[in-house]
Image 1: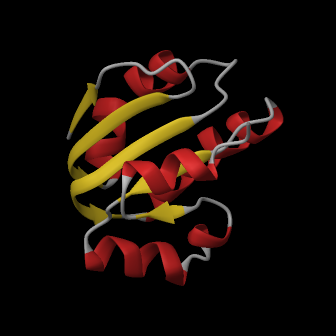
Image 2: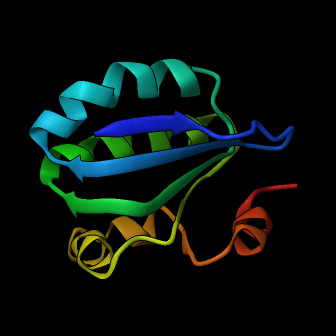
Length: 113
């Protein structure tokens, strides 16, 4: 699992995840993920186009950081998940808590003003 920080926008932090977000993947990126987002995270855009698998450990990590964003008055948005990953999110009702979008413009509209 790889985590990349894209050009940081002023209104949100844009991260890309690559690989499998399973137990091993979470173990390899969670500390960096938490450090990049931080306890004062507000708006976060996660590019999931290259995430091939999402396990319960990955769901836990996403929920934890989505809650941090929410407490700070922001939102976490997932961009372009692959069909199987999106299906896993739907089965866990994760997409009810974390908006799933197909474009950056759509993501920017999901962020609070």
